Length: 356
Image (tube, rainbow, N blue to C red; front, side, top):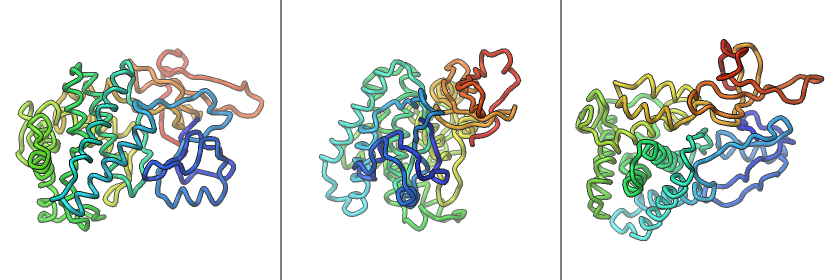
């Protein structure tokens, strides 16, 4: 199967995976043939894209570190939790947090059983569900980075729980500021800068979480060079968990279309993180990131510098910028042609130029 952006969906395409609604409900089953009406309905839901399957993409199976069922249950749980915070912070039921904790346990279990699989993350978010889907993505990526860092299971759980809760302080930011399409005023940015401390204090006072959870939430916008907030910490004054979460947060956020910025491609987000090493991010943590995340997710369509177009078929873990590409053939040419950008001697001067 292959990833197709919503703007490129066409009647007659076949869904490669089930399409789930915002509450995790089944809206369209895998193998559904899209009609004009279905394409319009999917576009109106403001999702970025879907996986479809066709003859060209046969044999391509994008991996996810956690199951679709677990991902959607986690999005639903954090959504309910944050929406209830909006309506009645004082009476937030503790069983909602227990649901989140149980789901985080499952996320850690699935990631640690994946035997070092790399993160194959592409933006499948709905515009309206961004905050909740982002929280789960940051949790998954942070846990994968923590596993690559060699953290024991108990620490992975604490890291994943802090990561999924990292942005709950945004509930206290007025929506006109949070969703403002233009640049924030200095006064508005000061309001935004309160959310890490507000979120940290909320989980400490409401759920009696200790520093293992509260400190990473408070520090996830601190920077290696001391230019972050709220405390302008630098280098290893910032906790390891916060250093990991900050990379996961930025990486996933800039791949998503928001009122104040357009989405960038996974490879561009990957290079942004690498380019921020030693400034925004701790160099050692960036090293772990580049060994954990794939800049060219399996199943995306790319154009090569030699003019050929194809799908990312397989990644080379030691050289993630040089995957194997399944080349799209013209009529009358051999059915399948693969180009290994890492090992094929004829491909050494060929690069990926763009996603298409």
